[in-house]
Image 1 (cartoon, rainbow, N blue to C red):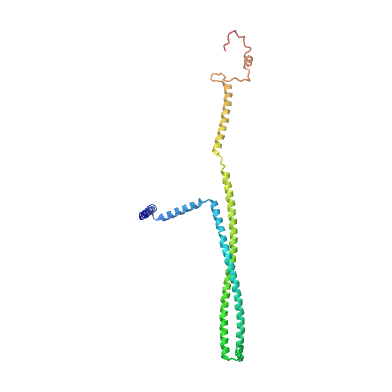
Image 2: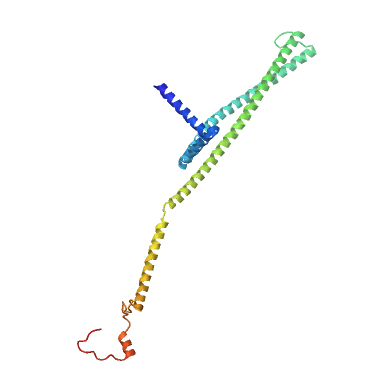
Length: 270
């Protein structure tokens, strides 16, 4: 069953690759790579900036254990350098003593005085053999001294570089924290601006409200003008549809045509 699933998976992959090759030809790998990069960038862009800030803060915090470990290593290196410096001093003191012995043996050999401290007498061969042994030992000690001095210089250079790195790491950490604080403050400012923009007033609704009010104002103006026109012109037969209450039309008629004759009783027709 597992083999069957693997075969189906391989077959599907082969068909997919074949389809891509048929559609895009030899450029298919480039399309696939571009699509993958775009998807990856889209995924990164979708990450919350707050999450990225926390991730950066954690990365900065992770510098502390390495900083402490390097301090411990540096302390051990400084102790080792101090011990090596002490050893070098001891070797230099030994060389001084060996030199004194060599010079004494050489003086004996030159003067012919072969008396030795540990013996009652001696000979030129004995003194010469001891001088050769002491000289070889001196040269070997010099080589040890040179080796220790070179090692000390290397350790001192390493210690100096370690101090510089610790100082640089501490400075860089401080700078990163400052930059991160600025980024967080900037993000808070942007989020505050976004919160202000959440109070979205519908401009189209405001326009419709203004249009409705303007329409009402226009409608009232038309009604007012219509009343004035009705009062002036009346209907098509000339009869006013609305009387002007401020106008005494009977006086106007009497002034124009004289007093009206007495009306006959019962004749109320207008």
